Image (tube, rainbow, N blue to C red; front, top):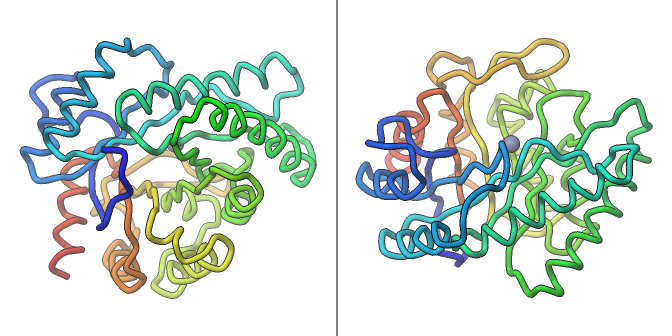
Length: 279
Ligand SMILES: [Zn+2]
């Protein structure tokens, strides 16, 4: 299912907890059975899947109509002072992208890196340079995947909303992964109709209206301190205003994938989908 979604789809990060097994294939079947639409395959601890499995996943995704995305390994730092680490970070993104394509997943989400005490504008330039190289390799290999640098929740991590939007404007083939619990944790705000509205307005202004028709969103409740995010919570245990958030998604007619990362992901994903369709 590599096509752009014509509507807003809801799903889980990884295999749903209530699935009768832990494989991605079982996860996809379960997503379809419980009335959800998409699943993010988690390569967060490493890209270890075999190509045979990837082929089966692609088949299952087409058969069920479940859209897929991929999350690249956490161990990526495109701003590492060591060139070897920057190159292996590039390699992890490339490996995720190649396997994502084989699975039939279109979006590849990743965490770009850390400031490590460097000035943010220099970090921006370094990360941009690394991603230009990654994007040109993907272009050479004709892999039609969309790289999605994620808005990050800790202030030590590169990835404010502005940085991510600007990066996507500067590097062809990039689109943002908007993580609203990260955004809330990082800023200590962005939890009202007006603020959610501003986020999408900003994205529209920086990346064009078409970016709103092809989003990749992460959502969950979260607890945070002044340094940013601490942990994920179920939506109804958090103070996140998902009711007005859903309203903004509807008002902008946003399309693409919403991946729920709450501890009990499928319950929240189903609740949000219902709210979106009926609210
Ligand atoms: Zn992430």
